Image (tube, rainbow, N blue to C red; front, side, top):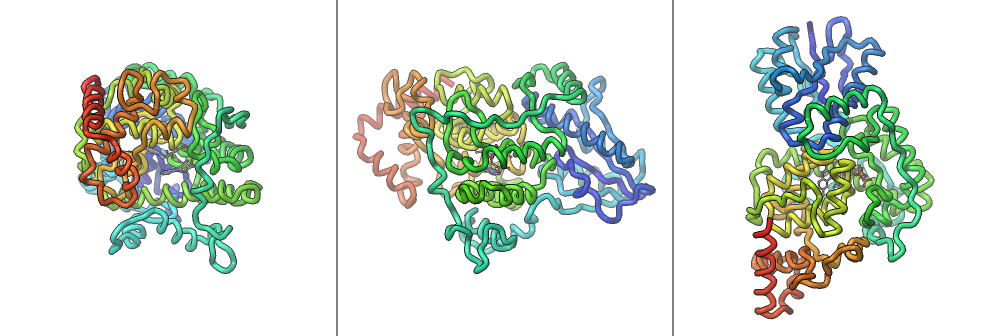
Length: 508
Ligand code: FAD
């Protein structure tokens, strides 16, 4: 054999995996379901189902096209093997002269696969992943020499470079680069009213078989597969994209940060997993948004959506490759608490957390503000060990792949890097949750109170966080207001809050 082309479970797009040199007479594709990968993080069952079901559908598509493929299906009867061990065994067996690897999305996977290929004395050709709009090298060039890195400036460069939402005179469409200020609305007392249901996908025979396998072999893993309705093929992903753009995009921006109990999806796209597995390409997602009538109904919505894909998604990936593996070791706030066990079962009296955790375990999904300002916020305020928070986020979401999960969790949500990704910690009291959702109305805790039986634990921990980290942030211009409010509390009140926060920590 001349070349073996590795296709990882999150690289399911033939056009990007193959290069012009691919010759089916001499080359072949290689895919493997690695049990160790599923167990390396204690994955939600729906997350494992998503990956395996999408891979098996992709295998079918390759077979129908008559592509030469070596596919290793999970063999539950034997010892679980790592991806690297499976690849090494097949390199020994097939003896390719070269192994073509498209840059894996996970630092550890990349290291171990490259080492395995080298150990087998095969030549490794690594290709850049064309599914992204920037390469890690381009990002590193952009970052070089900058005192601080901010997504906004990176995003503006990409807007200019790709001429997206740019007027003929080179200015941002609508006169502004950023419509963030228009995109923070809450639903108000009556709630969201009718929201178009997202398109869902009934599991077919292939997916049903995968669900049965996962239920049998990963019975002790968290989460449910009973509600699995994600797009697992390219056609389904395109349908989901069209549905989002037609039905929900126009309201996406305005209600981007809003939450409502029992409404997991609201105006969000549910496209992250399809994007991360390469069933969709970010360029086509952006093009679909720009071509939609929503652009004329609400430029703020369309710009807000483009900013998530072109801005945040590319930015966190660039930072991931710039900062790995060191990011994993950082802990700027010296957080040393264990993750509360209710993160794994949703059993808590806090209505906002119970709702976000409940839907996470049910569907493998929570939208951004739930991840950042509910589950992430609580872990940050409590002071949970960053690697436990990272392990949890990596496990429980169907879209969790490390290059995007890790920067969001460790950088944006837990501030482990002391301000590289986020300029300040995302901290808020229960008042924020009360403003952005109806959770506090249904909760036994009062978001206004930091002390006493009815005090909202988030509010208690918020003041305690400011108190504990006051010295560190006192000169931070964007935290001045929060610290000024803390200073209004007298010494004895601060002591009582500290004691109540400690009780919360002790009860974990
Ligand atoms: P929408 O709200 O519809 O947004 C549209 C798209 O924009 C998303 O599909 C996604 O591709 C992209 N996007 C939005 N926000 C971000 C962001 N902050 N970083 C990168 N891309 C973004 N996203 C993942 O894809 N995988 C993860 O494992 C993941 N872990 C996260 C962990 C934490 C602690 C936080 C705060 C965020 C995380 N995100 C992750 C980012 C974001 O929350 C999800 O992309 C989003 O909630 C997915 O739902 P959606 O497709 O409906 O997104």
